[in-house]
Length: 307
Image (cartoon, rainbow, N blue to C red; front, side, top):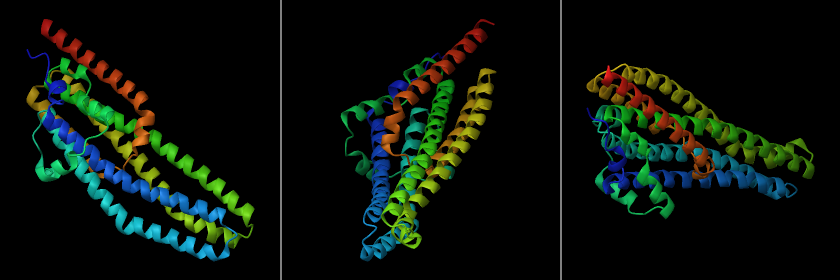
């Protein structure tokens, strides 16, 4: 009986590390663009509130706020979706190779071309991040057969992202509400006329407010869809622990992977500082959960072997 798999070793091979590096740089470019938009959307109402008594500047700030809103809807959102989809394909290629799953062209389309992979991976990440991407999945996953190990990997992907997005969604709405309230009070203190507050603060604040409300809804909707994926995983895991054959579990893993890819291809971005703030806590939880599943699988396999 096969007692282990090569996932921990395979994920460190140069070709697979290159895919993760390309994924990181692809998402990084999209996050950089989104960061510029959010920064501009925050700076605009701040300047408008501080310069509220400058009557000549108010129409400019209002027009700039509307221009940012139009830019987001007409251009930025489409560009971001393209980047996110490419990043999801790079992650999908990494997962299918490390987990020994076939590529599902019907769901994922064509792979990212070698030229685009090279372009996105040629820039190395920070030394710390380069080390982290070489151990993408927990080493304990290598202690169980492949058909079990890939399920643990998939469960880690689902759970990690779900918990991260729920926390971020709550933070985002709270921070935007507090910031908007403070800026509104500042604008009222500098010019108590309601019409001037609307012109100097409300209109310039519209882009960041619209973005925050949309992001909050997207993050919570994404977390809810991941919760449904968790339920599906539990069904597949129960089948695995009941002794389902490897071919059946590979098919079920492929179905799970299709759903994971579709989630990634449509999920909103998360800034890197969110990952950094929550990394220690989330990775500790992910390691503990993976070890629990591996231990459960080892105990189940041992009991069946001695039965």
